[in-house]
Image (cartoon, rainbow over all chains, first blue to last red; front, side, top):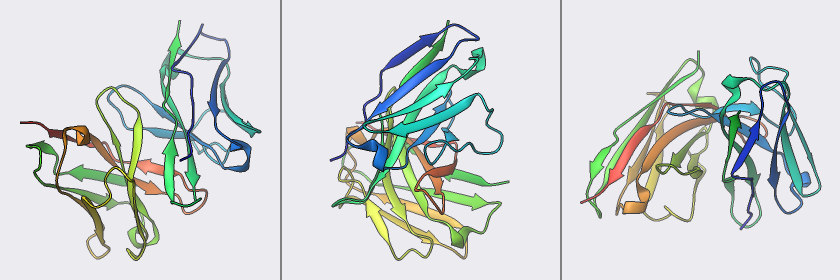
Length: 109
Length: 119
């Protein structure tokens, strides 16, 4: 089965840039989506189709995807960005399912 | 405004059954697929099941196949999942989520309902 690997945690000072990676075999051939989940809340999509932002998501959030790694980049990090972030892809080989990475806890120092 | 509201969670003994429901509003329900995604306490997200807009196409994760049954009623704008033979490892917050019509992601989520499987 297809596996997505994320670092468990990332820490950055406010105003700096946070980079969260999502590794998967040839993930560049898939569409990657990113979700933000704050404590006690439901996930919210922040990036879809590798690098598109839903309405209402700040331009500080961006995504990229190539080779074996997809990346969520958060520029000018704010305290309110502290949350868990999950990558997700759709796998249609052999068994259709929707796959999540293990999640990354972003801490704003 | 798109809204998804889950209900039906609670405490159930191992081997027992529970039925969760998801009531939708704010969009044309019959045009969208709906998913269930769960999150065990302190753990990550796990996709559980998906039903197509018409209800004719259904998928399950291997972890629930044969035990969970998803269904929908487009006249009532609702989706349900019947969960049988529950195990301790099924303990989680269960979210219903709307599937985007393109790109296979979840564009709106409910607030979730907690299922606890314990004796």
